Length: 162
Ligand code: GDP
Ligand code: MG
Image (cartoon, rainbow, N blue to C red; front, side, top):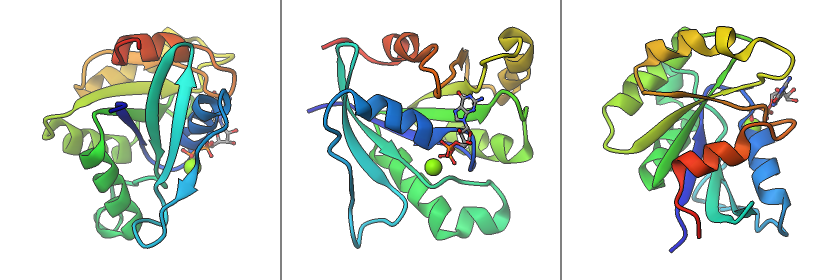
């Protein structure tokens, strides 16, 4: 059984960019599962010796309406299905109340969850990501999904090599 990694976070933080990067190295087995979900997308990934299933989600915005929405439901299901949750935040946009709401949900789960600050290209990553320690989910991992920076180290940290 391959480990399942779910990508969650509010819209526009770079989940799909990371999904595409992780699944590109092999003919990605990407499918929408009709009837099961509109927003969850599954891919089989082999990346730098790590093999896993990755699940992209439409996003969750953390608002009261959002948490009830189908999109949010899909994110919650993806979290349930996953062995590992990568909670993406936007290092350029900074910490938002939606991020706080998602973190609150994750802190209640018995699930390996990692905060991943994306879009660190061209900015001072340590300064930009410091505030995400307030999410109280441990270490804040820095990546630039669009360029691949930090992605291998992230997998090293979150998965056991095959
Ligand atoms: P999603 O809504 O979370 O799936 O986010 P997307 O993957 O669709 O990305 C949202 C926007 O952020 C797009 O314009 C991406 O090009 C941009 N983006 C994603 N990753 C990076 C990154 O590492 N650096 C920068 N500068 N932009 C990024
Ligand atoms: Mg997306």
